[in-house]
Amino acid sequence: MNKKIGLILNNVGASDLNLHLLSCLTRILEKKSGISPIIFYQTPNKPLTVYACAIFSISEAYSYNGTLIATQLDQGKLLGEIFGPTRKILYLHNLDFISYTNFPWESLNLIFGNKEIEIWTRSQLYADILVNNFNVKVHITEFNKLLEDILENKPNNKLESNNASSV
Image 1 (cartoon, rainbow, N blue to C red):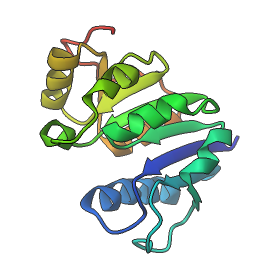
Image 2: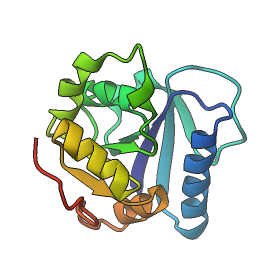
Image 3: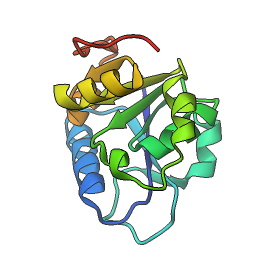
């Protein structure tokens, strides 16, 4: 069976986050077959490397019907507007949005209040910050483990924050 994983990135250029996420995806592709990853970018620019997957503009995500993973909070609102994915995940690798001075904070209710979107992060500390400040259910895992669990159809509650509560 062919597994579909879509990854929303701000762009496909060089950044620490892109390097980490794409390295995890590449390691998974080396170990498993039957995977159809797609990268959806928001801003076109020169790619970081030659990718072993398809790359499309974010406008193509509206007809995508696999698991779709957004990688930054500002993509969460967009994730909620896309109706095709079978599973929607917001993976917050960093909580850098907390320091944004021009972040549209009013959109947090749209993101965290959307029951279709699963919130994931990589540490208990990050999960606690999200739970305590935004009252959301948060799952904890590293990105590569999240990809492996998706591909193996494991349940989406591997390591749930001890303080997690539903919105």
